Image 1: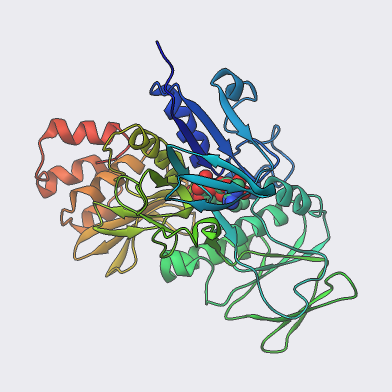
Image 2: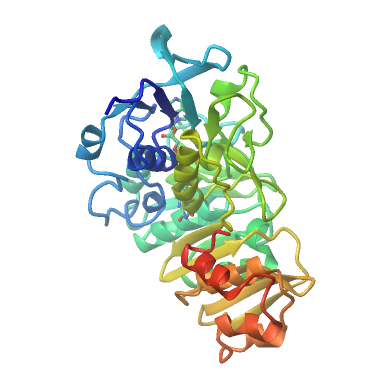
Amino acid sequence: MTASPETFVIVGAGLAGAKAAETLRGEGFDGRLVMVGDEPERPYERPPLSKDFLRGEADGKPYVHETSFYDENAIELWSSTRVTGLDAGLQELLLEGDRRLGYDRLLLATGAVPRRLDVPGAELDGIHYLRTVADSERIGARLEAGKRLVVVGSGWIGAEIAAAARQKGCEVTMLEMASLPLERVLGPELGRVYLDLHRANGVEFLPETTVDRFEGEGAVRRVITRDGAEIETDFAVVGIGVAPRTGLVETAGLRIDNGIVVDEHLRTSAANVFAAGDVANVRHPFYEQHLRVEHWDTALHQGPVAAKNMLGGSVPYDRIPYFFSDQYDSGMEYSGHATDWDEVVFRGDTDTREFIAFWLKDGRVVAGMNMNVWDVSDPIRELIGSRRQLDPDQLADPDAPLDELLKAAGRPDRDEHALSAWASEGGSF
Ligand SMILES: Cc1cc2nc3c(=O)[nH]c(=O)nc-3n(C[C@H](O)[C@H](O)[C@H](O)COP(=O)(O)OP(=O)(O)OC[C@H]3O[C@@H](n4cnc5c(N)ncnc54)[C@H](O)[C@@H]3O)c2cc1C
């Protein structure tokens, strides 16, 4: 058998890139395969960086593959190498040091970068951001009992850092522009659940609070808020969201709009160039709109879809978005995409934090979140995918099995076999 003369290049050695490389070899691609990443590490998973790895309780770094995987699969992993530009016409990448690398197919999986807080004092030591293993190690080394930490932002990263810091005995103050933690994603009903969770664990939560400046001699010692409050601290972590890393393609003529715009096959507007993971703004066939999803599950599944399409396939990326978070003793999973809803129906008890919440729009489930209740993501995704109107009382009734609800509402317009095959594939339809 002759090896393919083609060169496939993946820029970004994160989860999406690593899963794409694995799939390319798994699907039989035997040409040259190069993965270029600017971090010194081989690809790793980020979720533990704000959880057990941050608390110093993980068993090593959370690598996606063993070191031997890259040699065994003839994947050239160019670590600590930044790609600085793309010539989509010549099908060539520009690398640091003026090197060039040609490709036949290219996957852009460059992820996202934390948004910086641009206020006076932002350059002081002791103000941290969390994206990489190195960031997590730096912050983790500071999580000592009795130390004071200000967390700016109460999205997923901020909330998980606050939880880890409390678990290590730090005194934590969390500042948030909105009224409640996680309110922007989950709305007020679930924001209150997270407020209670953090308060019960000793976090001081300051709502409707923004940072005016940081103060200190060399290192941060105080956070001054816009309403003039002064919070003494030993260090700070800022978690105010991320921006897609589109820098290297900005002059390459690719369509960029909240990330690299791709169709449902993860193809960019340039020939032979694909994008996946946090950086990709993907046309989603179910939602009939573009979605850029910054979650582990998306990187995990878009990498393989991109790989199959790089090999000439036409596989749509149509998975319902999913993510998870662990804070203290409370784990949750969220499925769906809700930006607008009429009501939130609870099945279970928010006080004991064992429940499923359903977001309903026009009587249809658009999202579901299970907290400390497990093995329900597939039926939740099935409810969302069915687009059926459901009885809120039944959704709220813990004795009504979720997989029976669709039957009660009348089956969707697809046959039983197709539906169960869809569910067993993890809800991709
Ligand atoms: C601390 C933390 C905790 C998280 N926890 C959860 C969680 O609990 N649940 C959940 O669902 N999601 C979580 N996420 C989100 C999830 O980890 C991301 O969605 C996922 O990592 C995205 O993978 P990716 O491969 O698209 O991008 P990344 O993992 O960001 O990988 C992209 C890689 O490309 C490199 N790169 C970028 N530009 C260049 C360039 N020009 N040249 C070379 N290399 C380049 C980057 O340095 C990086 O290594 C968390 C994220 C973080 C940071």
